[in-house]
Length: 122
Image 1: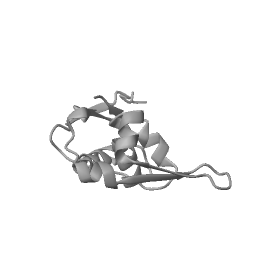
Image 2: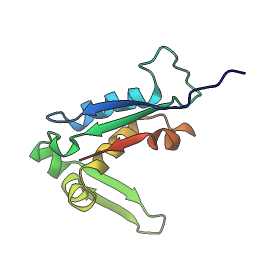
Image 3: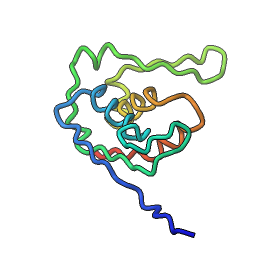
């Protein structure tokens, strides 16, 4: 039998002076492995994606005040809403970026596994 090399390839993406959506699309494509010739939709590629300079993302003030994130706690009256600025101050700039990438991945069993291959450094 042949020995399979399980070392993950690492893709590094510089996020300085780019918007959240532009970075998230590149990251989502890389996480799925769609930029490789060996793309298979039902398998998780052996790729780690690292985002550097996440704190230098370009975000407009109107986006910070206008964009809202909504979640539901599961209890009656448990609809919670927070603006982008509130999420950044509470959890850091990595959380909106992580949520954007999460929304761009397909909603199936592979999504949580793919998200574990994402590393965001500020």
